[in-house]
Image (cartoon, rainbow, N blue to C red; front, side, top):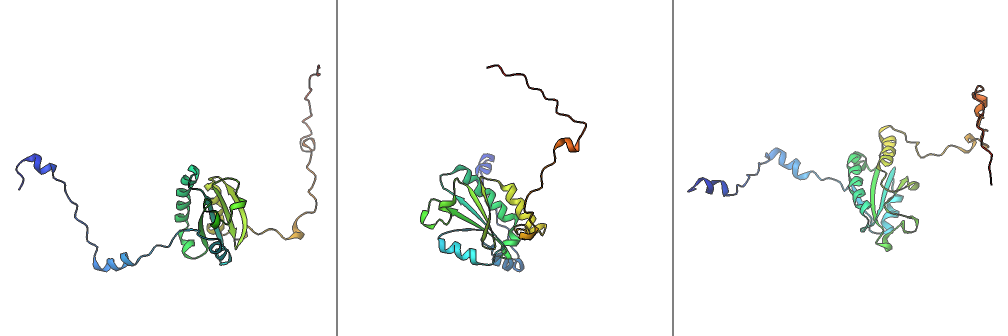
Amino acid sequence: MYSTYQDYHSTPRQKKPVPIPSSERLEHETKVRPLLVVPMSSIEQFETLLASNYDLILVDVWASWCAPCKKGSVDFQQLAEAFEPYIVKKQLCFVKENIDHAEASYHLHEVSGVPTYFIYHFGKRVDMIVGNDFKKMHGILQAYFLENKKNLFVSPPPDSVPSSPSPLPRPSQHYPQIKQTIQYPPRHF
């Protein structure tokens, strides 16, 4: 079959595929992973998403020519994978909007720079993040879903807000032993 040692080692080897047992084959073939990040194709599609019953909608506004947007796209996908159970339960939605397609851009006139991320809570915009601040986004999602702080975006009732801010105490009231001893030299003009 092989005439020399060199012939034996120079021939490429093919790996044999490992067969999946028939009992596991059906589960393996029927597992369908949901679309984690939805690309926005029209304004009507986004308005339908806003009218739907999602707890939170995160929108990534990006451009194809933007290098930070390309890096942020990978992080946005990883953030979506981290919160996949909430996407499956239809509590959370991740949306990507390309600002280059101006006719399909819902946020065209609200963006001063890309990437920009918008957070919607039950259809109302509650936050806008300019730049790749995924620690802040992860913190918001973690507080809302994992720490169960559902009132994160609810403003306090008007009667609980003080009408005028209390005056700030002067440092000398808290620390009477500290006196202002700063003396400035005279100015010569």
